[in-house]
Image 1 (cartoon, rainbow, N blue to C red):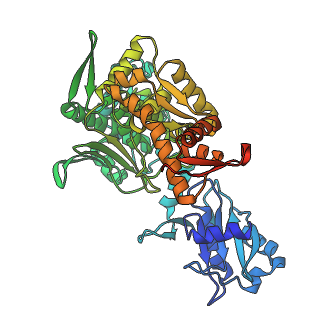
Image 2 (cartoon, helix red, strand yellow):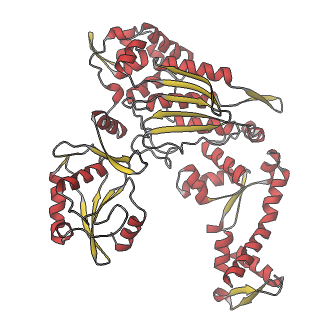
Image 3 (cartoon, rainbow, N blue to C red):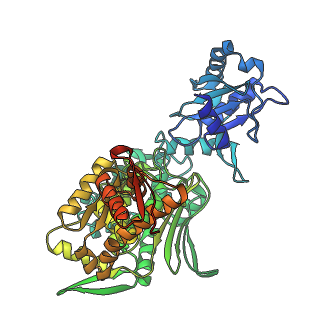
Length: 565
């Protein structure tokens, strides 16, 4: 790590990945140092953590004490940490000089397993009650939750010691079979004719060899009687709420088996969900307030992926302009906001997820998030958002409000012509309708894919006659074609977009010259995000009009204000 990189890290302050340990008053003892390493090793994320010794909490650089700052001691310090952590953590120790003081930088690589100190202390770097990063103690449930999040443990497969076969309700087994029958094509029909015990064994939710020797958590969540759920799974709860500002119209909580909760919430959605009728030629298309398929996937995801070791309910909240679905427990390890659409499925409770798939409730491809986004977009509404999710919970916001019926008409028309648009195409078209233009980088960020993959999707839309490109190389942008604006009911939109661009570019160049005194062709291309030849034509036009004066020739040319400004 260079001195400049370290200064930037210190300037950013303490984070979940960076902790300061000052030694201005007292030296940092070995026990506290090891605890700090354990804390950072147990944090979420795939990036390294950094412990900076010699930096105070307020960011002042006071330097590490000689024992830590001495270069000859760095290997000894790494060995000390390896010997005092379980499993051993191999760290990298560097000494970086800043203004005559040495800061000891300990880099802690991401760990697969939970880490403890040699004396059995588990700590985890997380957000404290004051909203700042802190090291918090971990109990047995926290350790299990961390293992589950990293895919090392399936909480739903754990045997519940005191639970018995009699705690399961035969009516819930029949409910499961009914789900299989009603969702033929998505479900596992081989389960239909099995007796209750054989069905439970086929799903893997009981441990049995002749007689039932153990009942797993998944069995209770799927088939448990209500009193058994209250005794053995006290954290399990789901809420259906209808909110109007500060008023609560409906506020119902359920401690039922999961399939019963799914049926109840689906029934309430159907009762409240309105539908508009759109005619495209002779075809009638229903456009609901919220796509039921997306809501079913979202509710099922919340029930499947919630952390059943944490207290708190799964909340389904119906607001006037949106629906919010939240569940305790953050994203599993490796799932982030910037890779939600492309990362491999990582269920927190694999046994439970498999049962939902075999019942036909969720997609067997395990791409439920794709379904949520696709259904929302094809109904002419803004994309869902997981932006409010954090390490303690996942929150999905599904926007409501008026649907863009012209966008729906466009998609139906494309379908009638034989072109079925996928999720990537819908994301780009929806963004272009809202933002008017995108760069390749913007589109890649939207799709969470590489620019090469994104360009392929964009060119597919160009070939379909829906999108056009303007500019070259870094200045290339993508726009809807005139025919799309016409189908979307905004005939003047394309003209405004094309007509205003030259004027806007001219004003941007003139304002830049007014502020900085001069401009070059390369600066024009970067400023207006256009190609070099377009920049040359723009500058030539301004010179011909007398608003700029050219100096120099070829690559050395530059431009300043003319007389007609």
